[in-house]
Image (cartoon, rainbow, N blue to C red; front, side):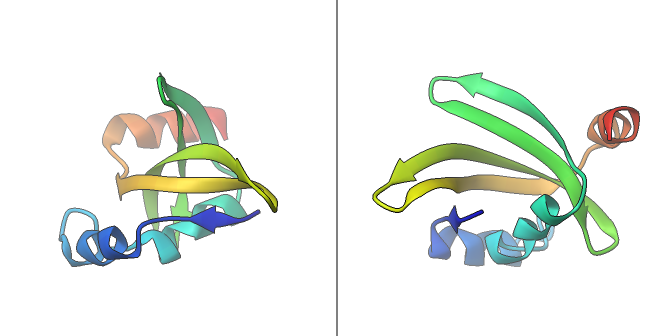
Length: 92
């Protein structure tokens, strides 16, 4: 699984206390069981809810392709809400 993202945005997210991590760390969501649903149609975006260390996070991503094949373009992330925590517990 390959990931791409805006490095400058990752730095801003890491500095934001409501986020607390960047795209580099949130890739760990995809290493463990996670909950996924479709967030929007245009562009087609998905939400994954999963664990990074001891905290549950949500990450929005798009599935894209380049010359090397498919990759996940990470759009944004945040600490999971209570509703997202419940979704994760019910479906993972």
